[in-house]
Image (cartoon, rainbow, N blue to C red; front, side, top):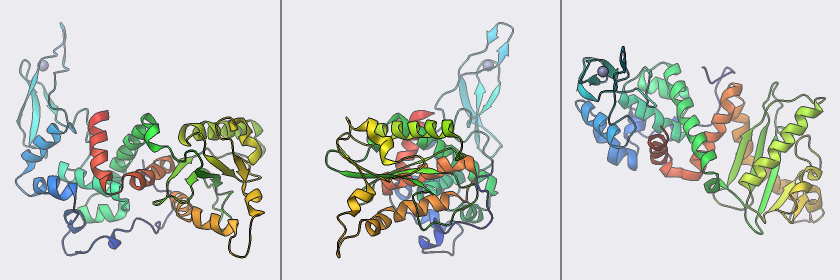
Length: 345
Ligand SMILES: [Zn+2]
């Protein structure tokens, strides 16, 4: 699946900003500090391929043991397999101790069927964690874009699965904390409306640094399809209950197709204060203008939503996931993702 749907490229995620040494093909990756540099980089030098595989087994990114799945007259072989040398790009493969059937060491892992070696696969996962553009990564690793896109999708899907199964770790707000809710593009006055724009639910804490937010791509809808709009409204309320901590002060648009102030009244027992932006605007003065403040608060989120529209509809969900992953984990994004991959596959 291709992940881009429009020509050109988004402005964010440009690796040039982070690449100090452009002389080497892999300078971006190999100059990275932290977990990657300390633990993984020494395993990427030529001649260390088997050590890298050993490490991948140790942290469970690939299976540390396998049993044979060959079907025989008496049933599945099910015998233990052992690692043997291979002439292929993976250097090692599994071989059944009983029937000699062979199996790739990539089976049942995030690398299964991927047309690149393990070294580049690790670099691609790092690139996803840093938000680098597919074209740049493909160029630096001399790989086809489709390889990068495939692994980006797998990485984002695992991150999304992790977020949904540990939703408590991703909650925002809390008693007395202001949380604003709106939808893109309707709530964004300065955006250029793009044909076939996919709406995105935007929830953000006010005044937290770094800014905490939750983004969720929604289905496109027709304005006359009341039934669909109502189902989207219910989904938004479910997300708010799951993501926004009780006692938060909720700020909503006064009128919006999907999240008007009146739509939130069923949440009043969880969030005692639910106000519309217009009510806040009554307190505008020479020094304070709520609409100007809103533009500042939403700027980062708006940039993400606009960049998301460069991608095909089915990747927009995963694109916003990648931003949230980086926003929450920062410099630990890569290490955290590797841990989650090993825990969930
Ligand atoms: Zn066997």
